[in-house]
Image (cartoon, rainbow, N blue to C red):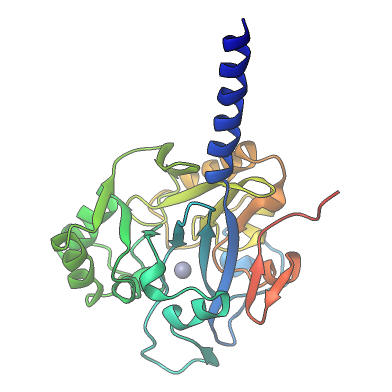
Length: 278
Ligand SMILES: [Zn+2]
């Protein structure tokens, strides 16, 4: 009996420790901005709302007590001038993270502004949906392929990661790729874009990346123009995201500058994604 109680004690202890390891601090880091303003009716198909939304470029960092430093998307290397730009590996220094510390990059989709920086993180394992990878390196560039948002120079970067044994292709929906981190598909922002559900400090948190461009898309449940292979799927996934979290504020869109006024500031250009503690 006594042994049973001791066993139970260690069972609960290890369970608690285990779940702590799989709990992540989540940060959004702005690395580039221009004077990007859009009216809602331009970014949400079917809306007549003329309010303005402001956009910027962000990467997300997930850290746990186990030494994992995971990026969701890797930003881009600047080619044309922008109002502000800090290279994604440099912007991480704001949180005392070195490029070699990044253990993983979850690539939500292969658009230029999300994958152009993958080569900056030499130790990182890249996680990408297999169908997105296949399309990006193959059919996209053939007759009738859809290359809008894709950058030719990014193809050798992902191939190089593969040659180094640092690419894991994920196939399917609702897959826990790393303890505490699960990916979902169906938005079809690209051929098979994915979004990320993280066990965060405030509960399950979704880094939607461009599977939601702006809060307005989520609010009105309207798809983005042009950049989706399936507008109905795009909306259905936003509805699904709402079911996956306990609070809508824990759904983080890809380009909405309002994220930075919604969450606590850590330092200039960095916010921590967590809800106020009650
Ligand atoms: Zn984007």
